[in-house]
Length: 164
Image (cartoon, rainbow, N blue to C red; front, side, top):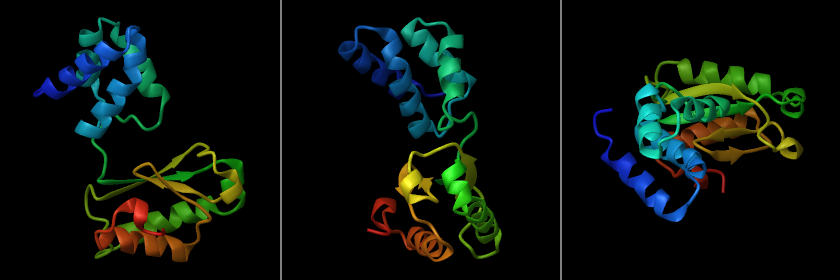
């Protein structure tokens, strides 16, 4: 890893707070995902080395959770819930609509701007269909709401203030 000073410093801070090294794995992975946009093999090795924990333990945590990715992510990561509740209320149509809308020229869906993925349950069954954009939850979705959300993002609004 090229510049790992920030990750090393962060892990050092966590070591001063947590006695059990295994409790540092998740916050270190989250820091790396947010800071570097990915959790690749170099990052796994760096965390392993700093915690003196076998890389396979770090890797198993990183691969278990969908929000840790090996490749750099788009600026706006859209995750559409595919649970039974969301599916019954149209999440598949929401997913298809987002894919189409963001792939059109002039849509703001340039390279590395948006990624759209299906994920398991977001725990929002009572307000389905739902999606996350950079960990901000949007519920009771329809095409009009999605258009408003995308337009809000394109106009520079904070994601957590778009529909609020």
